[in-house]
Length: 202
Image 1 (cartoon, rainbow, N blue to C red):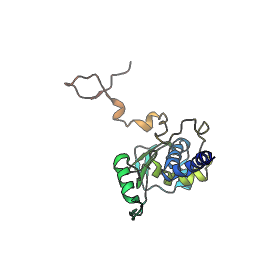
Image 2: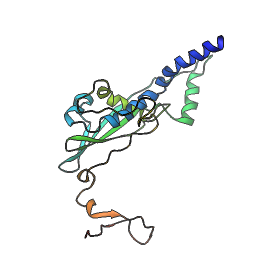
Image 3: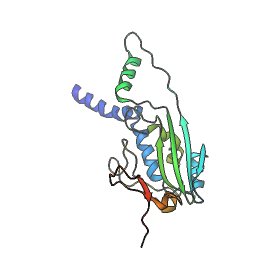
Image 4: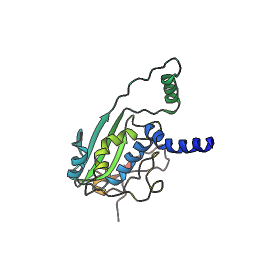
């Protein structure tokens, strides 16, 4: 009987444990990468706010950057439970407890075409969990130009441990006038430059 109660208690405690370790935040950050693709710039700013900075690539393409950071109180040891030391040991082996995120959004013709994350943004379980703080407003109050990720948990393309697949990008959002005329050549010839003029099309 006691064993059964213990098993039930562990099952009930698992969601709270995963939440404290960043698992659900990581899933939400990766879900946002999928669901925000196609959003209009107005809807993105309505739920995520104005970007911290923008970079214009050409007349139809921009990269918007969002930044966020958080701080943690230092955990101290006491006479019975060396909590602080245990956390430091865990972090030295497995990482986690990220404190900042940079979200880069490619805007193609005033719509979101892809979302990338960077920075010290991982939780104890999963990756990019800190970035859910940027996308939370869009996740909790969806905009009309967002779409839903397919599949039902735990199935579908959303994972806590890797980003959503990058959608195919238009030619104008990928290449500048110069890069469209030059291509990489991975033929392994050390005497020739990697970037070479593209072969003329017939």
